[in-house]
Image 1 (cartoon, rainbow, N blue to C red):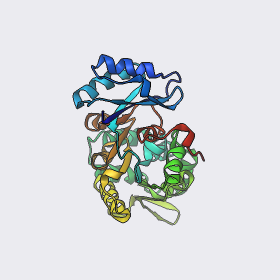
Image 2: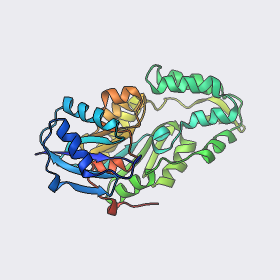
Image 3: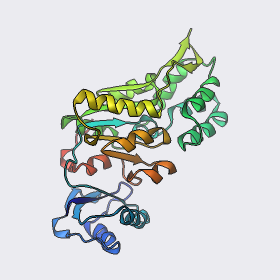
Length: 296
């Protein structure tokens, strides 16, 4: 046995070891319930399993979906990661902050459909960003402050970052959004730092553009490589988490690349998924027990 099956859920509070063992048995996977370890009572546990093929993992996930359970299979060794890179919109925070700005400005009908298509990977990210931002030209820069004030952190965001920081990991918020929002959010959660796009502003008004080059999917992957080199680690020692097409190259490169409530493109291509578990799920994947969690 050299793999670990991690079962977790935040949408129910009665998850039992028996639930997971039954799912494994139905998929033809042998596991010893006597050595299963509870990570959070009623929310997460792990158990060593025989080799699980990608096909079996897909079967397990399909069965677990109906029970509102996430099941992820990870290597037994080297689970604790030294670097975390997280997307912001719809990951560390619950919404797309550009969409929040659009709603406040009365531009949601024009902007939200473009955002949805870009996040699904149907549109070029930079072109979609330019198209949306152009509609904000002339709007007061205070619109950004209003959007920031409305932001809600995703459940488990602070716990994820602060727990990994306490264990010695470096954590960075890398977003295709805007520094005016990522900066305060990064500070609130305890990230080491943040990177995002810089809005062009003049005389208190949005110019409808950002300073180029745009921070896009390739830039996110480059930041992963940069921080791995800075820390002297390999990408296998990094965990990355995000929800949209803009995160795909980064997630595919990291040792633990996790789709968090991912768009269909990510669910198709990324093996590790948190569809029913909040951001603490990335801690469970690394073998953290609830007793070790650090809150804000």
